[in-house]
Image 1 (spheres, rainbow, N blue to C red):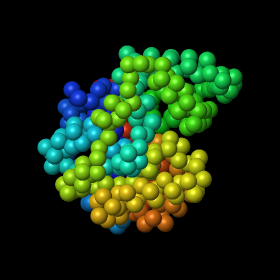
Image 2: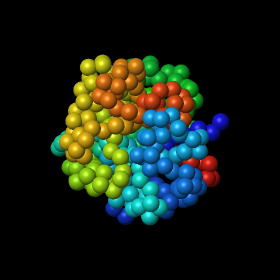
Image 3: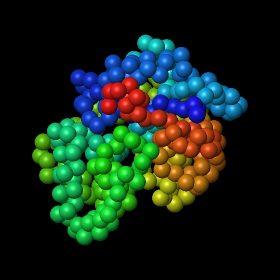
Image 4: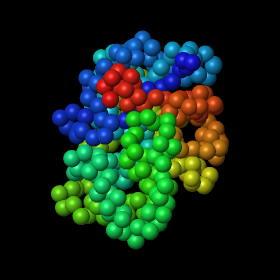
Length: 310
């Protein structure tokens, strides 16, 4: 059954922004828009109005971009402008306030320092197997069935699923950071500070996007990969800090959000309601509009599969 949903996008590549898992070019983005039909995409303001009034049509689509990445502004925004389209931009705030968030640094590291993603996975699991967490890692992954984990993301490989399971459910943030930081420390050719310069947008970019009719929304403060595992107090802190930063930048409270890594629980939804957020998006197509904070999205990789490009 057809239903309204958002197109979910993250990484883009060109001469300045390197290739990496899931990254697409401006031409590929244009091909996706053509395939889905430019006229089917609502502007974010119209999507919000229809959603609030429960008047979204099954064929309605919107464009969403997560994580405040500079490549989105420099590669994707001009493509949308050429079609007269605008989008939701879901932004985490810590990087605008001088922090260097590890999640994107680690992705950049594996993109530019390994020939392909499976080479990185081999190195990562070797590093983990040589660490003090070896026994726990082996015990908790014995019998792991990748087919049953993150099954809603058909474009993930078995290694993708195993890596995400180990990161989020075996190691957790602190120990995952420890393993990755050690891998980076062992690579004299990689500079975290240099990588950070080309990764994220600035407040000025958000102001420009807002002026052009795009909608800036919440995506937490520091982008936890397992928001639903945090206490309600910690979730409240994540979204409140994000809320205040964006309110100060765009001059009004953000009305929309998307769930980082599709992780949330009933506490998350209560936090969003208390902040006065109107609508939110998941990172996959299920469930279908279970609540106003769970509008479905489809990853661009699924669309490219349908186009025969993946």
